Structures are given as C-alpha cells and as structure tokens.
Image: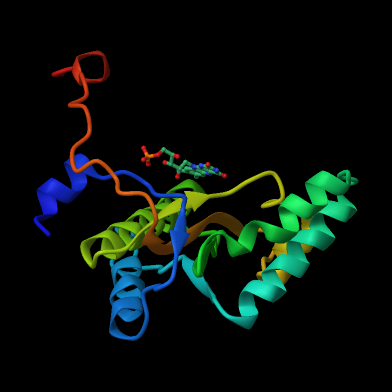
Length: 183
Ligand SMILES: Cc1cc2nc3c(=O)[nH]c(=O)nc-3n(C[C@H](O)[C@H](O)[C@H](O)COP(=O)(O)O)c2cc1C
C-alpha cells in the first residue's frame, strides 16, 4: 500500500476478527514499533503480545481491576470481555528513565509513536486495529500485570486483527486551516 495514501486516508477499525497478524507479519509490526523516533536511542518501551491464553490472562487482570475499582456487575463483565474484541492485542508500556538530556515526556511520546507505527504496519499488511486505553489502564492491578515500575506508563493497548466492516477507502478531506499557521 502506498505510504501517503495510507497516512492520509487511514481509519481505525474496532470490529476485528481472525486472522490476526502472525509470523513475519507480526515481526514486521514489532520492528516498526522499534523504529519509532527515539531521542537518545533509549528505546523507552516494552511490547507485550497478548494472544491465545494471554487474552484469558488479560481478561482475568481486567476483571480483577474492575472489581478492585468497585465497578458494578455490568462494568466488571465489560472489563472481562474486552480482550476478546480482537484476536491480538499489543500492550505498549513506556519504560521511562530519568535522563540528563531526554525528559520523561519525550520518552512517553516515543512510546506513543511506537503504537502508531505498529498500527500503520498492520494496515500496510492488510490488517487494521484500534488504539485503546480505558479507565482501568492506570489501575494498580493492570500496571502490576505489565511489570510497570513507578516511572513507567501504559500508553496503549493496540487491538489488531482483520476488520469486519469494510472501511471506506477514503475519508473526508480535512480542513487543515484552523490547525495550521505558517510561522
Ligand atoms: C492514547 C489514546 C487512547 C485511546 N483510547 C481509546 C479508547 O479507550 N477507546 C476508544 O474507543 N478509542 C480510543 N482512542 C481513539 C481511537 O484509537 C481512534 O483514534 C478513534 O476511535 C478515532 O478513529 P480514527 O482513528 O478512525 O479516526 C484512543 C486514542 C489514543 C491516541
């Protein structure tokens, strides 16, 4: 797929099913994440690939987190079932370190760029997905499950698979005027 066409017309997809990217396709996605812009070459990220039994573990983690947060039955059920909305999820944790030249916010942005790069690499290979966070992302239960130290931050859960709804091939051309100033 042409890179410019992909970037200008891309849409996220939330209804996702098998097949998920696998093998070389998944490797390409992870490599694209590793090529995110990265001040100081700190590689301030860790990627957790969640599939198969991993989705069951993630489901249990979210269920525990929702229970600990005092959510009602409906909320707990929603949390428990949410990992099954896609066959593959990549959790991206920003692994931040105090650095003399690279502030924490730059490291967070690098990890965020990794999410976007991986979503685009999925799209380029005929898949799609959606970047999600949600209210439980910062819960102690979820943070512990993804080995977060105090300075780390879960920046996203990238849900990936084969889109179930045919996305329009073009999006409305945005009016960039209010967002752009030629300085
Ligand atoms: C950091 C971050 C967190 C997000 N979390 C959610 C989320 O929890 N649920 C959701 O529906 N969309 C979430 N989104 C937005 C979707 O990824 C997506 O961009 C949005 O649905 C708009 O669709 P589009 O990408 O096709 O324009 C998040 C986006 C970002 C950048």
